[in-house]
Amino acid sequence: MDYRLVFFICLCLVLYVSASSLVSDPRVKRDVMESMKNAGDTVAKTFSDAGDAVVGVFKPTEKSVVDKMADGVKSLTE
Picture 1 (cartoon, rainbow, N blue to C red):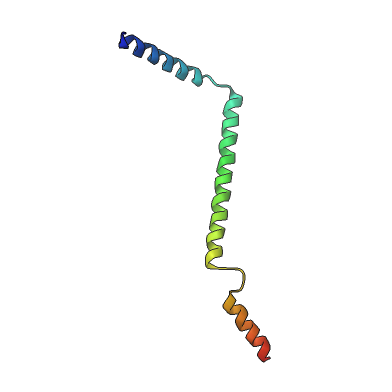
Picture 2: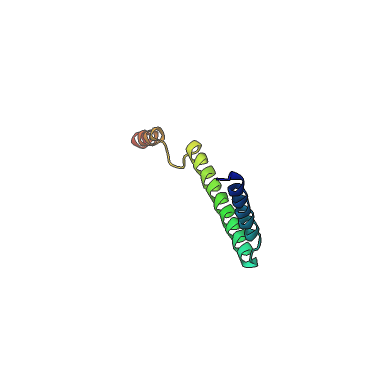
């Protein structure tokens, strides 16, 4: 079997598929841009939520157990 012929046919097939994907509809381009925008918004929201979670670790909004116990002792002594 002649491998050069097989290689040539595969190369022609690859070129045909590449060229056919270059022809696109403006609607497809718009859909792709809209999808990219939505993905960017989602990534930004995810990073924002992750940043809030990191801040929450170092600055908890609830009182710690030690603070609760101190408040309990204060209320008993008053």
